[in-house]
Image 1 (tube, one colour):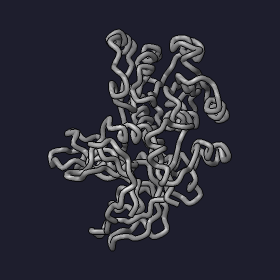
Image 2 (cartoon, rainbow, N blue to C red; image 1 turned 90 degrees about the vertical axis):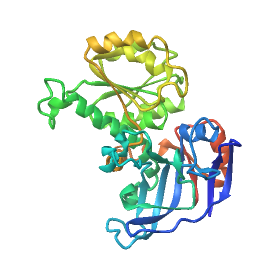
Image 3 (cartoon, rainbow, N blue to C red; image 1 turned 60 degrees about the vertical axis):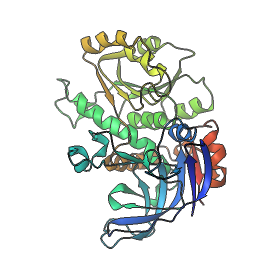
Image 4 (cartoon, rainbow, N blue to C red; image 1 turned 120 degrees about the horizontal axis):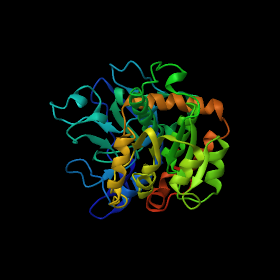
Length: 369
């Protein structure tokens, strides 16, 4: 079958004839891949910046943001059937029996760091015509979300971040009523750093939770900012406004969510986080640019103002299920706007051009259809 793979030694992307997977256990599911979203991580792997094939494999099949259709199921599969639409998760457990997180089915909290990530490290991804995986790693999607379901993976990162945010906010003495308005009082301000898919989707998730939300980006105003603002989300460009100016204008910032991959802009904005605020990284510092030496200057503020700094990436199936629920909410609230977050759909034959080119718009998708 056709698959799109990167050969790390040659740093080359090719369409290969990849062995078709088979169901080998009663709990496995076979799916036909409909489409795969392309993100910055895919482009970094295609360029040889990181990523690793399975052991002894000469290449890595790319793709970790997928939408598929179930075509066959094992004899013990009870939650999925042929014809269902599904989005598969990314991270798989490590093999260390001492890792309690992975033993409990939560590789997002793996303590060994030896977890596997499909399409990223140690396991082939979803840019292939067909895929087989365990039922527990596939999350069903309603048919009415077909056109936006490929956004579930980037949104799942935001969902995991927001779950951590809610847990951390329980430390505040006025958050006794965790299920009521006291936990999320009106007027709370959130700033999302970065205007890519994770940033845009995180902004929507914060918006529907009652936050006054602003995307802070290095990009100037244009088509992307106009689309974002049509959702009721604010836009601020670093070209026009310093982080401290944004904080003075928007009010004390309760939440900052870095969706730019731990970029220098994130560290620049961190000192503007308000008292008792929470800062959440969704990327790895130093991978895209050096960590500023001035990071030490923000530490006194973090301590003296009782702030929390967290990190999250490639979450569990629970976050994917939350993402599907929020996509349904977004679709009801913004039925004509939400599909516009998918900028383009291109055939798999164009994979090399898409993966080795610059990002265009919010979300580019490769389709097998």
